[in-house]
Length: 144
Image (cartoon, rainbow, N blue to C red; front, side, top):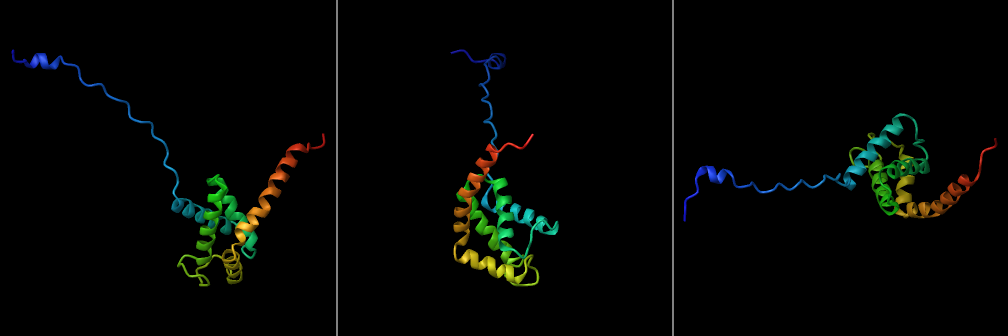
């Protein structure tokens, strides 16, 4: 058997390169969504876009923020509860201290809403109504 010379081995074709798989964005984790929504909610409070004395206003603002990030309604409810609990606890994680963004009375009402599972009831009540109103608005034409 003849020995290969260096020139002969240089002529052998290199193995074909396979293209790299397409990069897909990683799905946002719950922790990321919660942190991002907390920052957006805090910003809304400082811009006076949320009435901090109204628990329903707070729930609505947080729900609106979450619905802009996640389209799964079941997941939005879970995230809403997590975010509201974090907002109630404040920076130090203890509700009712001086670092809280919300007044103590509002925190107490929100905790009552969460403990009695009223968030699901409110969303389940309002969702069909909102859909009907949305579809009705599509049918109404403004006057010419």
